[in-house]
Image (cartoon, rainbow, N blue to C red):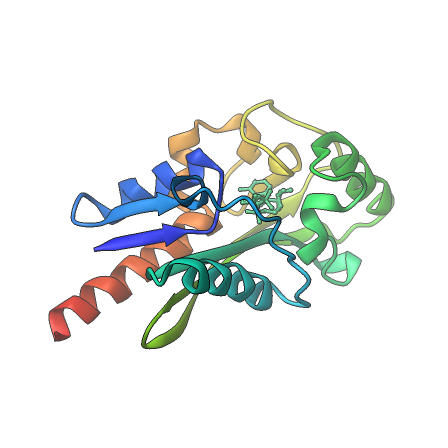
Length: 194
Ligand code: ITT
């Protein structure tokens, strides 16, 4: 069975292929030359994930997955949230981190979580899968691995930021892998029921 992922990011495609295993063929927007800028103008992670999945399904008719992720900071009323990628500058990780640290200056409540929402869409409808990882925001940057807000996020029960961990260590506990695992369980249980 083929599953089309609404991304041009080859790392995302590979990660999903690894988790789904060889019984599934994972394709991405690049495989279909779909180069339109998808307007992620939803108000929630769910809406943005659905917009991406619907775009792929309408263009190709293939079972499709859209995803949206971000960092939710309690003391900031949930920001940067769905604005995570462009909080201070579009995909400018350094500026985005600086803005969060500045806003949290003198703020004792450092609680936050990363979230991923996946939307799977096929001819039978839509299904959503959510993964979260809870932790705390540091007061300065630590580590240079990963991407995005990794250098300022320490997951619960660890002493290191995501950016100080090996990629495989992060992937084991990440919001993205938690959502993907739920999606795989759904695919397997659905296959069992057929
Ligand atoms: P595509 O939509 O092109 O796939 P994106 O950067 O928008 O790329 P996401 O929706 O997954 O990707 O994530 C949105 C932003 O949330 C991302 O740019 C980061 O700033 C932040 N983010 C998401 N997952 C993260 C992670 O694992 N570590 C650090 N930051 C993350």
